[in-house]
Image 1 (tube, each protein chain N blue to C red):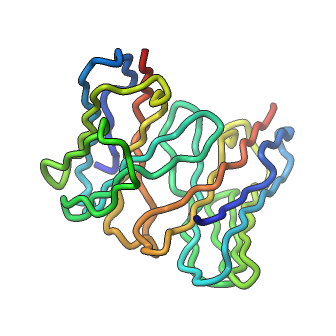
Image 2 (image 1 turned 120 degrees about the horizontal axis):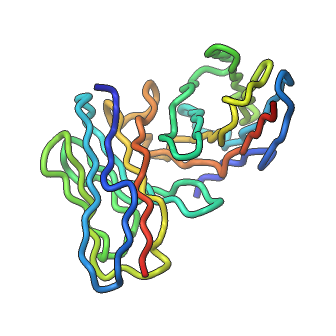
Image 3 (image 1 turned 135 degrees about the vertical axis):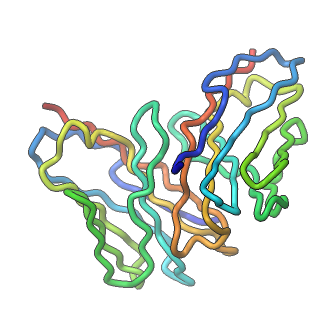
Length: 115
Length: 112
């Protein structure tokens, strides 16, 4: 299995809703990432998990809450989002946190719309 | 804040044309340079991870070169095909080498 699977592919949620995005990989990768991408902009880093521990939080608002229950699974819990949070949320993994020899394996993303 | 610049922003070529685009990055403390291809509605796909000055890597009709002293990398596509239409992103590891900062990408459209 050489894929990163993200669910759901599309999500529409109201500003008072609570929802979760899910990311799964079975390649034995020990680093997992959440990126946010808005139209015509590059992907922007949100969170990094290394060996199931949160290692980087790029000053993301607390309405986004990451969780790494095990080495294969990464969740992003969403609560009280704003319309400006509408974006494509990409999950990625890599064999290890050092990126000299390995690139990311990306999921296809979740397109989130906040109404 | 890392400055990773890509040019041109977009490119439209005819099938069979060869094309190239550029990624510029900070030349000090170079660690690695990544190239990704991102087709619409699909996952970004890693093309190359380049680490050595003067390196040239090839994958089918796509190749990339690296100049770490002057801080640029070129991506070349020989004999472009419609299936090469995608956004090509370059990315540079941050100071901790554990995450990537992406350029805005070059959007390539290849017409039949």
